[in-house]
Length: 241
Ligand SMILES: CCCCCCCCCCCC/C=C/CC(=O)SCCNC(=O)CCNC(=O)[C@H](O)C(C)(C)COP(=O)(O)OP(=O)(O)OC[C@H]1O[C@@H](n2cnc3c(N)ncnc32)[C@H](O)[C@@H]1OP(=O)(O)O
Image (cartoon, rainbow, N blue to C red; front, side):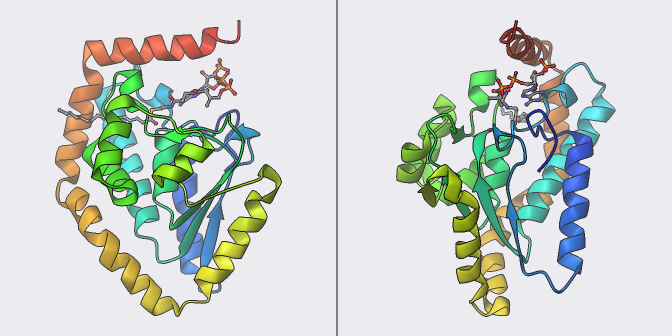
């Protein structure tokens, strides 16, 4: 991923990601992809806050549909998808890595990962929650979501948000080793098993997709939510000066 400075998931970047995924899926010589970041120290800062602030309802609806599409397409991809997490990965960045089949995280105490939405005064939607529950179990997910926990590497491994923590210079090579192991499995059997495991979760969003968009638009248009998001963005900007 190369969307400097922080790989935020803007509408444009989400669209590019989806086009890239589709191209790789349609090219039958590809069987797996490794998602990693070209922005030093940052895997992805998550959803682009500027897409959710000070825009009109039509824009929010278009943006949310793209976020849903990203989740559905990566979560259900027939390819083996591995996240080589070489930086901090909050909220939507964590969600993207949770869609993958396997997560390798660099052992750097700055590289926290988690769904921290509550810290921003917003609520992780049910499908974010379901993806986390499917990964770390109900109790750990409940605690992580309510507290908006961002896990440093050792904690992330202990709770199961990531599958492996390795020295920073070994993230890519480890991801490739894991990929080789996954590609050794008969592809058809692996794909069907992935679908079996994930389809019920995806179906829930598919059947409630429009309602979910409406919920998002209603929620994000609230004055109180806009104020929280503006204040959060301002805090990020002031951090520098
Ligand atoms: C009853 C129930 C109802 C339920 C209804 C539910 C429906 C509604 C649900 C709504 C859910 C919405 C879900 C959202 C999920 C998300 O992903 S929200 C985004 C969360 N992301 C973050 O909190 C990360 C914020 N960023 C940072 O913490 C830091 O930037 C960083 C640690 C990633 C990097 O730090 P550093 O290297 O020091 O860079 P900075 O100087 O902070 O940033 C550089 C530059 O980028 C801008 N920026 C950072 N993050 C974002 C972002 N996510 N979006 C847009 N822009 C971002 C930052 O402002 C700086 O900009 P300037 O250079 O100052 O202009």
